[in-house]
Length: 329
Image (cartoon, rainbow, N blue to C red; front, side, top):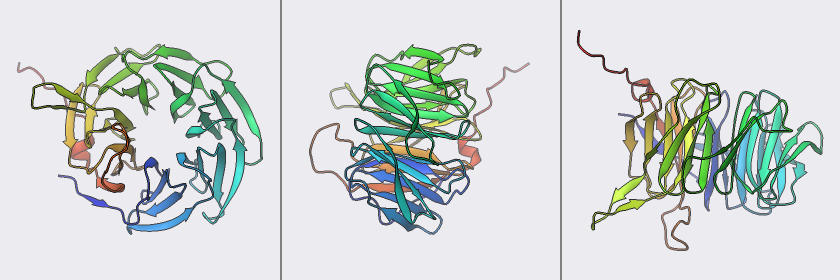
């Protein structure tokens, strides 16, 4: 059974994003609604550094490909770079609306920000000013980058997939097979497709054109009520294991589920977190999973447990796909 521990000195308000360092399993970046960005040493269970140079809630965080610079954006509409050994910040650029998501596209060395102003903007982090601007039809809610691909989930059910080497037009424009608005999207490590979660407790596994696999969807993050009717919870986060390509989902039911996409099975369920699962991320080796337990206000303003970040060890025996059973000869 995998072990876990809670990080000390957690954010003081809702946790909006978690991101492990691209090489160092012990370095974890966290953004939150208390306007701060924090860098944790998960091995030593210590807060390594933090800054509060945003003027409003932070909604997106990201590392560059080497991990020597971190980025953040949020409700103050600014993209900040945190550099110099995480001792100083500078403004990279601004949007006309609130910034909801950040992704560093390693294939192009480009930071991409998504906003409620209905634009994607690409930034050359070595100089001020955007390199590229792409107008989209709706507010951007979630993004995911993998190699040269970028997936963008818009308000509603539209998902755009771009080649970051040419952002002028999307490679594919999809309407999610889920019937309700998308909450999160994550590209597969293989770049064959993506997984998205919706507000009504469903997940879709969708493959891009040319992949010899079929799309499918399934129900998750639900509980049976006393009257026999399912209580349905939003799926807030998805993260792929970088080695085995299984994936986890986190819901407002306070549970994390581990899935095998090829065999279409749930491998494990981790329950008992004190609040909604707001964010998830695997470390570069896949040996650790960061879990943000943080109320996501699905039921409006109410008393709720304090925000917390958990680090869970993820042994290969749990995260690798199970071999399909073969019929006896």
